[in-house]
Length: 254
Image (cartoon, rainbow, N blue to C red):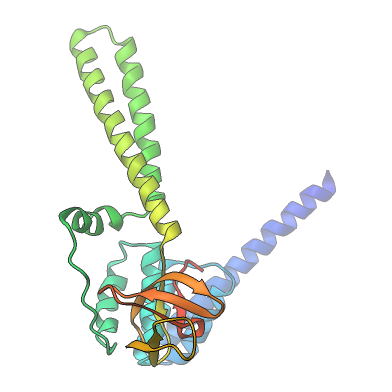
């Protein structure tokens, strides 16, 4: 038993020391950024990322470094990663707009339906994790209101609790459906950023394939398929083609 206690104590101390060290590194990187030493700051931010202790703020600060260094692909990539963690990060949203202006390609999105616009402008602003939290809250609320209805003796209160419990149950079902949809969308949608300065996109996954279009650093694409070291991608305007895997970097939390 004593060995287990000592082991747990050692793990806690090690984790605390590691967190303290990362915090010192983060502050040092911030200081370097303020002093205009963007490359050194970026190296320290990257060092923190290797520890898997990531945050929206960390990715945002790293993106700022690359933006200052005029590195289009990495700056857009890390602003996008900051928004993956926190879709409501306004600083990352605003800076991403400026970073995209450095990219050569101007890709027009295909027209969206009213439902698609509503989804992208409102529903997708909240991550599936937060929708799941809303669902849990609504489940407790619905249960509380139903119990209040069941034990209430006043007819007026019974009507009130019954109506609100039904309403909260409907909202619960809706939030559960949205949470499930958002999770499936996140799990099945793979996006990436072009990192090569210029890429010749082919009509098939071979070196001798015909060129269908050219795309440049910083463009965002959706990955549809993979064959050996080739990736099938689609642009926001609907164009589809194949490019080498090392021309892109997949957007993920880590």
